[in-house]
Length: 196
Image (cartoon, rainbow, N blue to C red):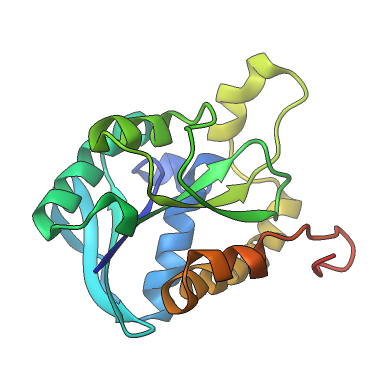
């Protein structure tokens, strides 16, 4: 079984904010795979299903971003999922908007949600699907920037980003992390939206 967690903040106020990229991807995955993530327990909204022959639990922690690890830890313990079988989908300031990277293990990169997950697992060997949101010109603007809603231009591109993130997750489940990294860890050009 794989536990796929999208990081974000609950509530309408944050629904289309950059920090909620993980929630948006989980909603897309659930919709396309017809998995109901309406169950509420373990400080999460979650649901069970099968994707590419793999049993999965899809979850959106409801603890707010900085405490995401509390929910992820509860889910992993209940469903008896090892850290290596967890996939965390999250926003990433270090990647330009529309870029996606798949990574196994590593640090938190300054992401407080990831830091919380690592703290509550006592390990960082889980898979990450990183979705670029770009970054503001000045470092002190970061907190406001991640909680801002997407710009009009970004909203127009969102369906393409979601489709690519969905494909990346399915590839991880069907072909493994390394194969998915080889296929999706490519730069996307602004004009053509094709890998280069």
